[in-house]
Image (cartoon, rainbow, N blue to C red):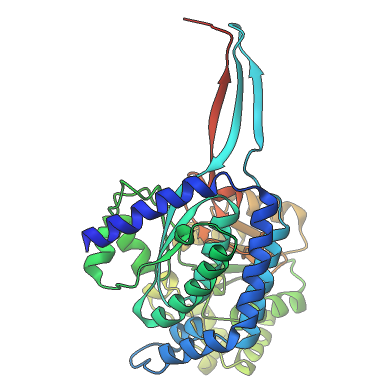
Length: 414
């Protein structure tokens, strides 16, 4: 296994060196060709996906949803690839420049990270998103997905690699590790000689495992225990619409809202309305003691662990709070630093919320479901970083680059 990974890593390094010299115009042509190929070969991809879906014994519905591809989903993925082609290339941008007292001309230039490793679970869209974002930003990528999506990932990679070959570019710019054992995954996390950064995408368990065991630098993408706080000044119909969207539009994803905090002043009026709307969408409600008193048998009592769970399901926990300070305190204690929202018409409250809540994305009067590279205008995303170093929030092209200093002299010595 070590020999296999070393071979893949060496191939990626060589490919990255070639890719760093490819002009933006060529990269954009390749990306458009990749998008076309994904659409033209949709039947092949769906056939591979059906082979993966043939055995989903023991998998939860939310996992199966992430694994499943449809023609519409593939069309959306291809559209995302085209959007990446239309984005500005960050490479070569001069961040800043100056001349020192000794006459040295220094510029800080944006460059690729090099080789990016992605370790992920049953999300075939990650295969495409990661490949195209790394390609546009000048990085070779090594993809190690889960066994549940192996056939789909391999088929997608074959198509993308064929496009690269058609443009006389190294196919090893995109590689998929077909071996899905835990032993190989552990070795992959320690491939420091070849991988410059490792990005895990998936469950909290996967992410925590990578963070705990990797020696390669890790950009931590996080689970989403996301909250909505309904302020006493909120437009209640707006609050209902946003909560229903954030909870039910696609509950299996990390930007779906899991917790609802309601100001005590409006709880008697608002809770029956939101409970009815949630019931219509078949959402189970778990509530604190006050919520249970108001809603009765419409809600089951929340347990202490409920406040820290990412359900990824048609479940929401509701807590009544005395005001904004308690809401902020509760969120910062229990959230995963992903996405948080306030529904309010009070400007000062909105500003306090955005300033004090510790999360990658903080919303005022909008659904948490917008935390997404496509929605942010990035075309796609490599992941949503919940850490604070290097990158935070949806990661697009710029977040897949670093900088180097270029210093021009005229014979200066120190």
